[in-house]
Amino acid sequence: MEAARSGSVAAQLCADLASLAEVRRLAAEVQAKLPRLDVLLANAGVFKKSLERTVDGFEATFAVNHLSHLLLCHELMPMLRRSAGSRVVVVSSMAHGQGRVDFDDLTGEKHFSGYGAYALSKLANVLFTVELARRTQGHPTANSLHPGVVGTNLLREGFGSSGRESLSEGAETSVYLCLSPDVADKSGAYFVRKSPAPMHKLAADESATARFYERSCELVGVAPLPE
Image (cartoon, rainbow, N blue to C red; front, top):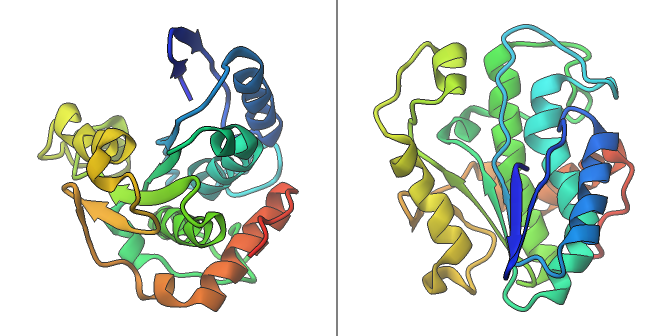
């Protein structure tokens, strides 16, 4: 999270999202420095080709791309709930469609592949927003998105591709979900090019999304929101 703005108050806030302690510190700073929070856009992303562990012992791609977002959202939930019309937007990827969930090996203890870990983390983004939307009942709303094949460092270093869309084009759907009145009441959906799109079949399995969400909460040490 590089910056947060609320009304006339702005603050430059930085944290290492590979550390749960840093995520908690960041959340505390947001709460101390900003009077309200209308939108949480979770856009941090890494692609590790080889197995790396965070300071908390988690596989790094899953930890940064998913666990840090879930924890930050939970820590900031009181602020989000105090703001009418608040939104949570999580940047996923079309790669989520190739994600596979092994509840006994979410953090790469038994098997690791760089792409497999990335696809799982992007599927985690989708499953998290679906379950969050169900539990918050639209306050805040929660949606995920595919930004496009954008020419970022992650794409170049992880996939060896230069991308076909500019950074501004890649930001369009995120900005739309954060600000557009057209989706003010939309929650639990996955968007591509500012339109709802099909999700991984696991997202339609309520027992699976609940189990995945509750297991993720257990890993970061927070109580799940009530159903």
